[in-house]
Image 1 (cartoon, rainbow, N blue to C red):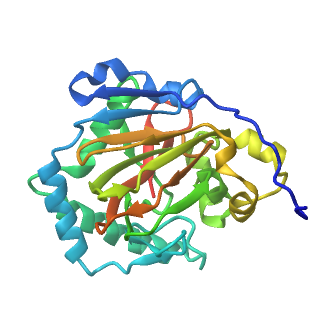
Image 2: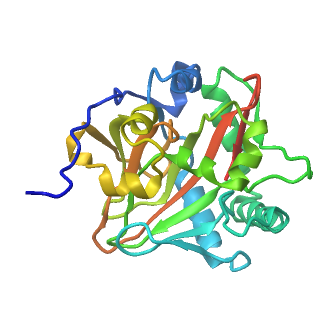
Length: 286
């Protein structure tokens, strides 16, 4: 007999995604509001970027050594965050964080430009699915902002366990950003720069943040990894080609990155987004 048998949990979320071609993005003009309201989990835009431009930018990012890499034990081989200084840095030195974030943003801009205005493209995509609201970097009283995104690399055999991004709000740095966001809404954007031979897909589970808080009062990410049994839930994997992007309810839907199979790594770009207070605009940050 098991000393601590697994809880029998329940599906609490419909795994509904809007899947459209970028050329028909007007069909998704209200998708951001639908995600925020919980009507859908996310929207997939096919062909949102030129794959060749992304590949060239990725090559430049890998070669640029100005920004130290950050590594995370995330299941199997270590996941490396190549660019982006997360708001959940443990040392609490926000001034140092913003200095590094400025360097990260500069490196990303230089890697993808001048032929391709990477940040402007992100703004266009966010605005298009948010009923044409403006989008921009998260402001801060210092006059600085978090980095515009991060590049996560999984080597073969690597994965990221199931989690909710809202657990990051437990950190002092993230709490400091809350006045500039609309509540605890975290809608992530994610797209591949390099795809694995197989695996390395985002996988979503029909389990939401309110249910987790009810089932495991006071629990954090470690408790979720230990006690949550994903096979109990409906799930959906979202395969993406280079050029596609998925924008999804990362704060309130349980999700993971499946194990990278074969001999080729997985490399994705990601960023957090949210409404600014009043919901008149969208902000993005890492």
